[in-house]
Image 1 (tube, rainbow, N blue to C red):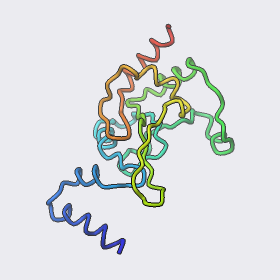
Image 2 (image 1 turned 30 degrees about the vertical axis):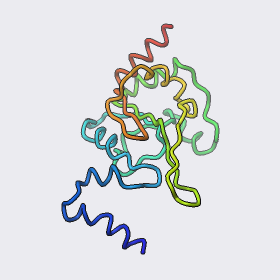
Image 3 (image 1 turned 120 degrees about the vertical axis):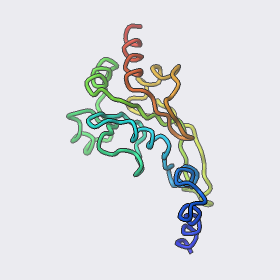
Image 4 (image 1 turned 180 degrees about the vertical axis):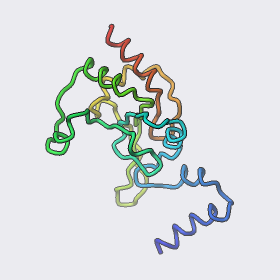
Length: 171
């Protein structure tokens, strides 16, 4: 039955009645396909460029190799063995951000869960303070317009975020 239902959902795409983009943007997933934001990044990220993501889960559509999460260089072992990352300050984060020259920053602002008795989607706000770098990024992006977004994440321009971070250090 499961196979039949998903085959029926895909049939309009297979016969050209619905676009792939529309299907991937609107079809329910466990944690969001992020198709629009990921496609935006994939089409604009040049070889050798990196992007920072606070979104812990990255679907197939997002570039996998160039993403950096909340682990800074040299912390890989700590990440695997400790539940609590070491504390850093704004200056260290700005230095890391600048050395990494992030092209984009992916920031989740909502989440969805289907892990309930009805499998109905439950949407919830995601506070940036819940993320290791969130407290540093939130003031920097507060007045920025994202380059693109969907119902769960926003993508910001990395160089603009770095400029805002430098400005926040001077205050």
